[in-house]
Image (cartoon, rainbow, N blue to C red; front, side):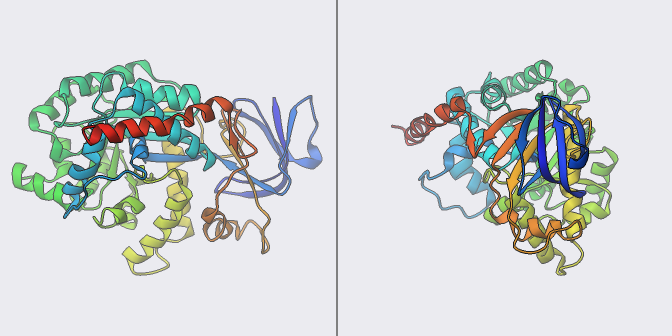
Length: 430
């Protein structure tokens, strides 16, 4: 067993100084250093550091990793053209090898940003076994927790999409790996496809993009004479713990359905701004009693940037600096932990006995006094800007030591650039 000593603990709930944490795969004991007894533990000295739970990304697109630095003809006039000119062109060319190495790059950089759990929405031209390729990178090589699904869309072979989702769900249901069913967005899904998906769900949650752009709603109303969430609900697709991603343009009726079905809304404000589609009315979701979780839509491997962006953009949306305050952001962070814990059937997000030992050690030499009343301000206006953990543990295993990932992960990471070049050449027809 291991023991973190001389720690300052913060789990987005309480702050405690001069503490110890004894852990194996789970946290076994937490207490004051004056009561600490070393029973042959492997000790990790966290003096001058903060210890917090590993972060969770509730919506990612790991395949987007290889878009970094890529040059393709790109002059979109709207959201659909962004998809057509960039993302659909990229994902349709991905092989399982490329999927694996995109997972390697993302996992390495997520760990360095203190992220220990990822909920991903995958798409690739090679469908069958693509989720296994991603799992191999995230779980087997990087030892991260991940919940995966395949982006089912009429752009792809629907039979293969359904088979890949159902096969992965049936084979992965433990505290490191599980599956959801991943419809893309309703405007890429015919009635025939939704009927097929509904028949195989068996109560499983879906992970779907909804109303990311007003074009999604306009299409649904024009073609089906109903709004997106109502259409999904007509097909009995929204089950408990389904992830409704984005949700920028939802009616009160749609929000009532989401609440009734005990689904969650995953917000990704940096991506929304980048795609110029608008911003989600998060306080409206919360006022409805809907659980809001936070992702980053694959735009980077940082979650702390997303926390900051959500806080600032909601001041813009609400046109007041007080409605979405510290308590609101903390609720989103903690609801994300709780939601992920439910998906994996474990306890995440607190530094307490019985919770998984997914821990981040973050050096911090505070320039101003630090206490329980002001610690979140230290994060929001300081640490979130330069969030560089020194050590990260997942399930008690040390996956980042002195700012470095393990040798195997780094060796695989070093191969990724060549694989990315193969993808770019393929996209150019070379």
